[in-house]
Image (cartoon, rainbow, N blue to C red; front, top):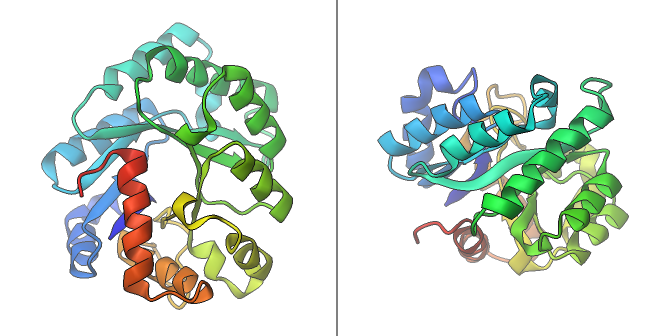
Length: 260
């Protein structure tokens, strides 16, 4: 099985990464995409991808780190320096996060716009991992303004409303769910997940965060628990876990260009 979004380079996982990978593989999770939040983080993820079979990396600037970039050329250079490395399968994560006041929305939008320019001008066929929190309208508007096909994007850790989900689906994007969808407090989100076409659906852990039920109190979250997200969504759709995993793994293989 594939965990399409985790952070193997983050504290809680990186210092025990060999054990984390062993536990994941023992649970049948044989492929993991370690998503970067900065170009330096991307270098660490890419190095891990070289050393470990079944580990892949991305390169991008998370909106929380947008304030560290005031020079477009420096950002472009830093991203391109990593994008061509072995094991890098996507841009991101990038996007907007309006939950906090800093960095300001203006700064976030500027850095997101620069990254979308990189994707358009240098991106090749690599897909894009989107971080979106309380900013759906602006994220979608900026994707449209960049002239990029919606099919290239996955909205990771989706937690928005049914209306927001329908807007994301309308541009052709993929949608990925984390352990949040398994929480008793997220019943509306679980219900919304039912409307995502099966061929547009992926699952992830976003570990070391968001451990799914029934392991919600376990810290840190790990890629091995992505099976619980799959199991939960499969049950909602009346599918066997094996049948569901086959489909969502196929989606991830196709979207990220992973080996089968």
